[in-house]
Image (spheres, rainbow, N blue to C red):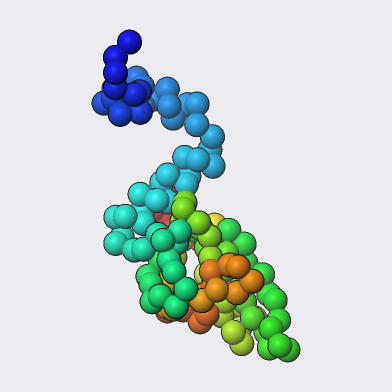
Length: 132
């Protein structure tokens, strides 16, 4: 047995294929999202701190209409493979293209609300649908 742990050994084609077959679909999707974050030059959501101005990317998991203080608010959960954050558009009931499964890039100032990262009224860019 060699002294180098298996995870540090160079992986051959067969080993990579075997790892992909034995990994869950959710883990594979998370890995792809983390790679996408790196290639777009965005900050990982898991690395974001309170009051930091960031640009993040990921996939919308859920989209709901949840009024805040009597004002309509469209709320979505953005996941990038490392963590999730809530994206909230105040005063909006719907936005064309904002739907579960859609990829987007969002920019703004992170805040913490009830222990979760939140991005209020961000600048955003919808990613093309055909790239999946």
